[in-house]
Length: 405
Ligand code: GLU
Image (cartoon, rainbow, N blue to C red; front, top):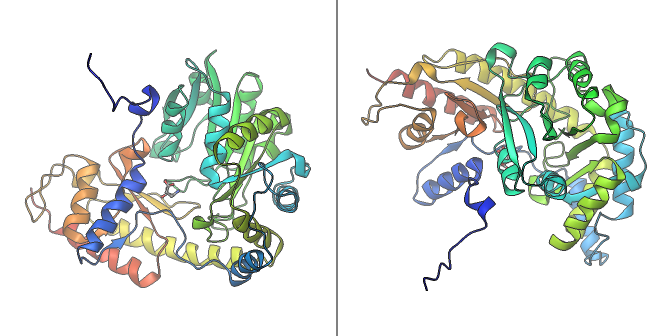
């Protein structure tokens, strides 16, 4: 009898490792070998977590808040989350309508794994954040990718949504401002999508609002459940402190949605992590209830960086990008680089080749667009200081100028 010890779960076997993390690992390996790499790969703010948030965490340790909390999160934090959803989003909810999870990722994963079965479909507009289709796959269901190109501003249109919905559709995943494109849905665009969804009462909606506070040019952020309250009973609105308060490592995400769904998610979480780190929960409480100036200050900094990046990238031969309305990503077409050869002799056939050669030959790390479901593009995270961004853009430009046919 042959023994196959390495046989994996069938859903995992067909899933991909996270492309963002793979690139971050490559950067770490290169740095460890002594190279100076400018990384525009990781989607995380470069700022320090605000001091009062760190102090609250230290105080929590000193006060002995080092034990398990309730699985769905400690009540004061859930109350602060409910207040946040009321204050910022106009969602009329109570603390029992919330859940705290280990990062935004676990909110999404809990929801999908709690509700999906083989044969279920999840509509994922592309470009998408790398983990959505993989999480659907890991839950045994099928991602239905709807391509949304630059011609529609990388946004899902009502017609494309209507075409994608089938009797098997279980979820639609929406993300605005978007990772990786920075696209922001207007109130009118969300209302038009809601019209379609109202005609399909079997579809749940996941609204990933993690970049809520990063909208530029004075644009206002809108979330689906507030734009169309009739969809609130079947919408999971997800957010977290990672991007708003520079707290990626603290791993605090949260969500609000119908109670049956939150209870199912809590059941998954109770068997999986028992809930989120108690100290991080105290830090998140301080972030949500303390001074909010950090949000506006970081938005202003990111908007300046966005302007610099878009200008420099569009000045680079072979690259072009739309002006992103939010988040901290530029999604640049690299079509003009394909078919060309680098100074070291590498032929650039795909956007993955472009990202690889940029790292190898220009010491700049970006993530290839096809990992986000649309090529040939590169995603450039501009969460670095201005000087490093300028240097990175100059290195990218030099790389592009040195290509030959
Ligand atoms: N959301 C960030 C990114 O897209 C963090 C990495 C990840 O979780 O994929 O880069």
